[in-house]
Length: 246
Ligand code: 5HY
Image (cartoon, rainbow, N blue to C red; front, side, top):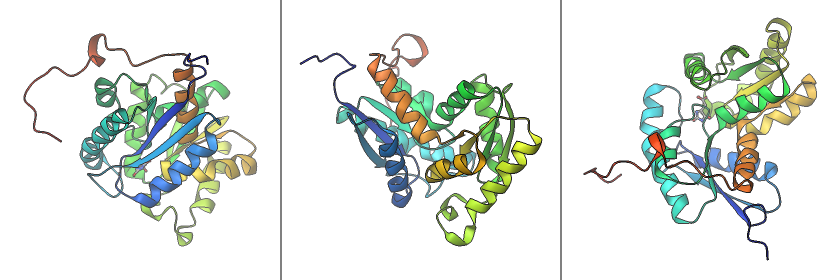
């Protein structure tokens, strides 16, 4: 049997860095819907940190649980890791501690958008977290093709509540972006919106990109190419020293 990376099983550790199990279930369902038949998705909920991530403090707290989840996935032989939170919390720290590829859903969605449109806008949850996406765009060298980061001002844990009317709010915000932003695609700015991308794309007639689905497919591609996270330079394993166990 050909054991080349292209033909061996791909196991993707899809991590929800907040501690809300129901959100992990939604994320894992979206990941499995995107994955190819030979890929096995392991959905994992952070064991430490905030119930939802809605700002700089939440992101800092969530990073500890995220890194524990990466280590747990590695111990089970994960081929790749996906950080299923739009702030891509702890992305570079996670890449330091593993040889497996690590993808953040924000970077994956933004780069996917760059392949199908010359410009895109992001629609996320709370207005106060827009700056986090703006910082990511600058870090990823993509700010010149993102016209605007928008928000529907629905809390992360309200996304699955019918009374939030998130579908209607997202449709309105996306339509406004199409009218005013000069874009060809939309990036959904929260893992909790993963189940809404397809219906919005059909309704709007443009690519509406969910980072969970994009990250899973990009992870498969990297694994299939036999690419691992470089251990040369800044992503080499952390310098050994005394550290309080996490
Ligand atoms: C997420 N927060 O994807 C981010 C998105 C956001 O708990 N999961 C979270 O809205 O900031």
